[in-house]
Structure formats: C-alpha cells, structure tokens
Image 1 (cartoon, helix red, strand yellow):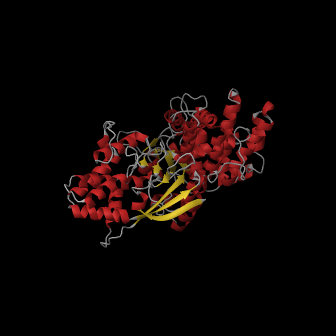
Image 2: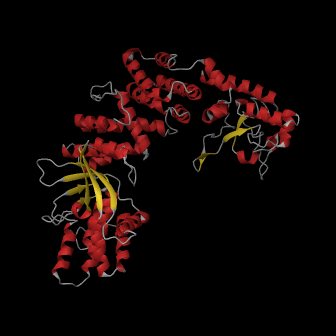
Image 3: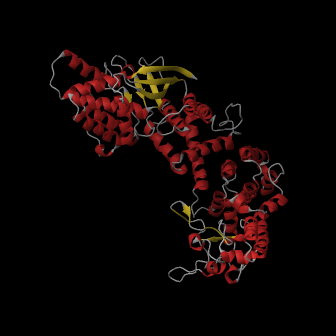
Length: 590
C-alpha cells in the first residue's frame, strides 16, 4: 500500500537541485485556506521557544505517477495541497522581500537564487515545481504571484479579479507581515522554513491514498472518494485522447449539477449506479464483496475507467439525470408526487432499484408510478418497525434488480410486491399495527410526522391544500404538536382535566399516552401553543385574529376527530383518536 514514507526537511522537499513535479489534479478544489490557517502555519514555523530548528508541519499523501518515459519524478498530491501551496506562497513573499535589498555579497545572491529554484525548475525556469489545480483560475493566479515576486517570467497577463481570490490574499498576508521584518529576521525565518520538516507518504494508487487518508488524522478539508474518481476519469480521457481535459470536465459538471454539490449524495449515486447495473457485462468488475460499498468504491471505478472511460462518463451523465429526479423532484415531473413521498419517508436505499427500473422500463408509465408509490408504503412500515435492518437494504434492492432481470419479459407490479413483501423482507401487519398503537412519537417521530401529513394530504380540497413540507431556515414550518403537553411540569388545568387533580396519576397517564398517535396533530405555531390549556390551544388566534389553534381548518383537527369543538381532552379521547388514525394509516400504507 505505502511505497515510501519519509520525514524530510522542507529544504529537501523543495530542493533547488531536484527536478521534481508536484501535481495537484487539474480539477481538484481550488485553494481554500484562510487567515487563521496562514497564522497557524506561520506561528508553527516561528515556534514559541525560539528554537532554531523548524517544527513538524504535518504530512502529505501523494501517488507516484512517474513512468519510464518521464525522466523527472511526478507526484500527484492527494492530500496536502493547501499546506504545500501555502509554503510556496510564503517562499514567494520572502523572495519578494529579499529582492528589494541591495546587497552584493555572494552568500546573499546564492540564497536568493536557491530560493527561486525551490519553486521553479532549474533547467526549465519557466516551469513551476508545484502545478496547482485549474479550478477558478487557481494555477493562473499562482503563476502571476510567482512573477510578481520575481521568481517566474511568464508575462501571461494579470488574471481578472486576482486580488479577490484567496490565493493572492494569502500572498498579500505574508508580504504585509514581512514588511516590518528587518533583513536578518527574514533570513532567520527562511532558515526556519527550510529546517521545518514534513512526512511525505508515497502510495501506488488512488485507492491506497484514500484508504490511508481515512486512517490518519489530517487537518484541512476532508478528501472524498468522488474527487479521486473524478481525477482518475478525467486523466484517463485526456491521456487516451477521448476528450480534452476541459471538455471532459464540462461533461463531468453535468453529472455534478444533476447530483448537487453534496459529496455524500455523489458517493451514494456512484454506489447505486454500480449496484443497479452490475448485471451488465460492460459494467461488472471482479470484486470479492459482489456489490459496491464505501470501502471498495474507488477500486471498482478504477476498473471501470480502465474498461471504457468514455462509456462510463456518458452513462454516468444519463443515469445522474435520473438520480437527480429522485433527490430533487420538480413539479413538472410526471412522478413528482411519488418521488417526493419517497424522499420524505427516507426511501433512498430503493434508488438502486429505481435507477434500474427507470432505465429498463422507462416507457411503462403505469408500472413506474405504481411501483414508486408502493415503495413509499414499504418504507413507512420498514422505518417504523425497523425491519428489515438498514444493513440489509442494499442487498434487498440489488436482489430485486436480479429478480426483475429474470422476469424481464413479463415484469409486473405483483412480481415486485411479492419479492419485497416476502416475510424475510417485510414485517407483518400485526407488528406494524403494534408499532402504530405504541408510543409512535418516541419510536420514530419522522414516521409519525409523515403519517400525519399523508392523512391530511389525502383529504385536501382545492381550498384547503397547503405545503406541510415547507421549510424556513432548514426547519419545517409545520411541526408535530402534542395536544396533551409533553413537558415535565404539567399545568394545573391539565392535571385537573385528565386526573381530577391527582398529580401522580396525571404524570403516569401523561407518560403512557402523550406520544400516542391520537395525541399528535400538526401546527405551524407550535411555540404559540406549548403548554396552554386545551381550550386556549383550541381557540388560539394571532394578532390579526387568524385561527392558529385547533380551529385552523386542518382535517386532522376537524373532521377526523373534531378537536375544534371539543370542550375537554381526556385519555378516552386520545384512545379513540388513536384508533381512528391507525385505521387511516392502515388504509394508506397496507
């Protein structure tokens, strides 16, 4: 796994005599360190004890990309680009500061020359030793900084808005800091940088780099599998002249735009993609586990890229569009309601199967609608009963793909339902009812909320339709309201109502019934109702006279069991309303 691991001083890492190339993959994220990071690095180098020896500055992980056809070593930086870039910017600022000194002694001139060749190739002084990513003008900015500091002579023209980007801000930060340093202090700082040391770890593959990164504690932005797979894919396309790197990246951006910028969603898509189509010989690769997991994902995609990188890129584009319909349903989508329901009930494990279904049976609209609708019902029961276990869900939906492949010519909803409702994969109706009858809010408040929302939505009219899933500042506007309050200090009015003034009995009844389905409703004004007495909750209005209590025209508060005109709320009411809501839930989800 590890080719070599050396504790080396910075002067050796950036040796003037070493014709090495440190390459940050072209489309890795741009430079991201901020002032606090620059301060930390500078203070680490200066040290608190005045020691002449520089400190340990962490580690870098790189993949050795050197080939027999290339004379100079090429190391692809997988982790450590922020640290290496910042060190080179500090070197640049020191070079600029020393260059303004008018000194003729040979030692000073040699020092300045060596500093220059720490950042550019001695035999090819127009080439940098560190090649940054191309994102957001990153590499162009870097070359301009080296030119401004007197190290590089490229004359490419100053990039627009250079001063607004973080790379130049870092250079300016160090330059400003050094303005107040006398020459001897600047030279001492240079000595400290050169004597500081770093662990340089070389590995053979991207997969080795990722696994290593996972096992050690590194500072900075976490490395993701998606970054490594992207870099490998784009590099292969460029190397084999299937695409220019720029064209390949534009196509890759289509994949990312479909999936959002969330690395977790991107990684899930890559796992689901392989698991949905691994029955296809063009996709399947030899792996021990039989399916894609987080730990083997990079190895799988390394093999897929070797097989046919262009086919893979094109297929990822089309399949990511389908996946995007699941994670971000649009109102004009013919399956908008079904995808939205599945999203709300956390049905993401089924996306493996849905990717397959919407690819292979895209013209069977009835099958797609009925199947997606059934999957929501399946996940209501699964989430509430916690059966089957989460760890088994991927295997179940991979198995469902295989079942549909066997029955491809006569596929039907019944085949799909029969597979999923097998007792090994589906809890019984009795167990489902038991969970509905229990303290459902304690067991799974999200499922309780989903059930209440669906009961309400099934009874919408054009006049009463509202968005119960609307969010403000990442939080739901409509939340669950406990009619009998759940707080520890039950108000006197409630103690009198449910237990005739007996506090101990009221506490016992509260613990037994407060989280029952029948004691739950929905409100957009939870904080306005809180621990109020029942009649005040029922009749509550806002400053404009609008009903925000139980007279708010929700089906849950009116027709199903009229909270809006009841005079009291006692345990018998909770029991009756629980039975009614359970019957409604069973009709909707069985």
